[in-house]
Every structure is written in structure tokens, then in C-alpha cells.
Image (cartoon, rainbow, N blue to C red; front, side):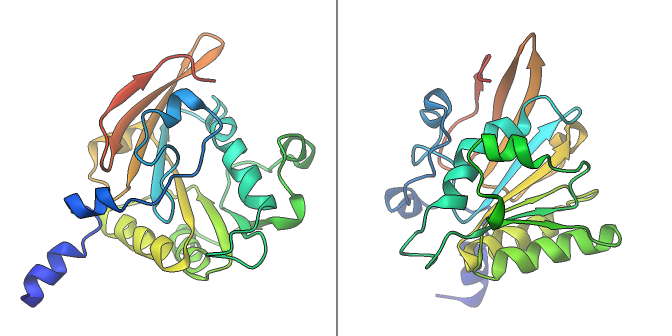
Length: 210
């Protein structure tokens, strides 16, 4: 096989039929209706997920809490000898421990990283993902171009971790290496979830999920 073809096939944006056949089971989201629309029956493991919102606080963290709680308390014999860390890189708010604990998060497995500037956000996330000690890494980058997204995707694969990047709605027009891309909109007292991109799956709209 030529080196140029090797390079193409290792690109995380390239989908191959055999990848679908051997797909690892997803991480249950805690929302059966969402899981039915996701290949593998849950969040894609060892990959990058993007969550696009107009503003924060419309349910984006609540959407992730069941899965993050599980990751913070359960040990995977394949990836970790103890529960992995849940790293928060540059959150635009101060996480509220009592609320997280009420959702089932083990606070002793949480790390909050405050990079000094924007250039360090992606570097910190990449290091955390590839370390092999983080079960999940949440990040709020000011910029995430296609090349940076591919680096995060590869780091997640290397460290057997789950990357979740929160981005503004304007990012929808930009290319993305993410395995899963969601767009969230407030819908009365609930949140509407658009699946914009799902590797091995199809776009979908789930109304009033949260």
C-alpha cells in the first residue's frame, strides 16, 4: 500500500465500511432516545465530540452528566486500572461542586485546568487526552480549526479518552474532524438536539430531550 494511501486512510475524517463493522460499543448517554440515533448506542469513545450552542447554560452539561458520572466512578479494565480523571480545560464558569456531586460525579476525579492564554487551551487538552489517565476532557476553545480538531481526535485515540469541545453556533460553517457534532437550542423548558454529523450514522433532530 502506498504511503499516500496510508496517509488518507489514517485521516480521522475518512470512513471505512470495516470501521463500522468493528465499531466499539458507545458510552450510554443516559438518554435512550439519543442513544438510538448514535452508532454504537451511545457517545463515541476515544474520539472528539463537538457541542455547538448559542450561549452556555441551556443544558449542554446536563446532556453529558450521566456519562461523565459513570466515567468518574467506574473502572474500565481495558483502559484504566482506576476511574480516569475528568478534566475541564478553560471552562467559562466555575463548576459548582454540590451540583456535580448531585449528578453522581466523583469530585475526587475532577481536574480543572486554567491555561494562561488561548494558545495553551488546545495544547493542554491534547496533553490531557493523550496522557492515558483522563477518561474525558471537556474544553472551551476560542478557536478550533480543522487541523487542531484532527490533533484532538488523534490524542483521544492515543489516550483512550473522550474529548468534548464546546463551540459557538457560528462554528457550524467550519469543517470539523469530530466523530460527532451536535447543535443545541432551547425549546421552551426543554432543549432540542440536532445531530449535525455522526460518523457511521445520520443527521437527526431530537426535540425536547432535556
